[in-house]
Image 1 (cartoon, rainbow, N blue to C red):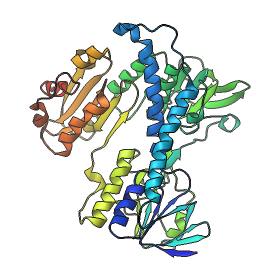
Image 2 (cartoon, rainbow, N blue to C red; image 1 turned 90 degrees about the vertical axis):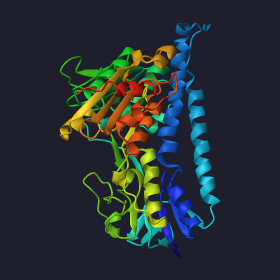
Image 3 (tube, rainbow, N blue to C red; image 1 turned 120 degrees about the vertical axis):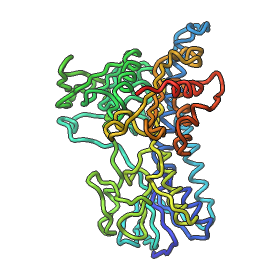
Image 4 (cartoon, rainbow, N blue to C red; image 1 turned 90 degrees about the horizontal axis):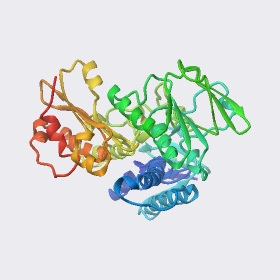
Length: 457
């Protein structure tokens, strides 16, 4: 059946549903297509389920530390992963149903459950239905990237999605990939009781960060008993009856290790390979992402790409901001651009890392003359009181303009405290604005002005 709409949205992730809300509120007749679970990666296989499990792991960790705070717990601390999984599933289910119910109750919005494929730049096939529109918004997200590695096809392995289905604690979890996804699961399962080994091909963890940040994160994880193998070359797999042999061929240490479970955490890829984008004339970049301009328009007029599938961001907050950019430009007569936003993200190990703007290394490579401030968390009163003194905070300032270029807070509350820096950067105010603020005591944030008063070349 041929159906005409003012707008068609593919995907009910973080950008699609709010965009449907804005478009229908403006009077448009909208179709939204979702082939699987409403809410996208964040709700179903990303932020919400993983952070819910991290909360369970952190609770177990704190319980083991109870004597440090003068608290006695009789008996052993045991992990009931079945119960933790049930709690995680309930959190995701409630969020997912909330999104779906909102959309199904939205006036002027029609929901199609099925797989969308382009038949032309204005037509989408969903089962027996052919949807026609002059405005199409693609919000199809991404999934785990599975590299070609020798022997991988002969073994059972986990991804960030399938590992969420585990209801028993692995005896030895091996993780290929030393960045955000891999490290969060590493600490989580170590705290659940697994032996954990992280294998990273690069010379250090989280390569995108400065070396001092990478080193500090590595020290935090090693202190909890997580094995880390860096400079892993010629990574390969082999099957054993009770698990997986992982060949790492590192410069030091055993050339092979055994794990009962193996997790691949080596990156993401966009869900653009089964949309028949060629029939719409849509351009993809070398990694399969939909090519977009600064306002998220594809090369085909009338088609936009939002969220993980456009390669402009890999986070829930950037996907939602994509919606804000498109809605503002289309409906509010504004001129908002992707390049207006300041990059920010967090690594949810414990303590967390909050990052905004560029690193010191990036600033120097760009030829900027910088001043840097740094303060160890062991000198922060709030961290001392909470018994969480690992990590440090660091800020980079342009020596010529006094603009804050970037900052990292690795420590208790770092994922929240970083927003004070982000807000000043967004306001395009000089670092002195933040330095002269009077933050609340006792907090982590109160040491940021102190750090800014100690800037050094």
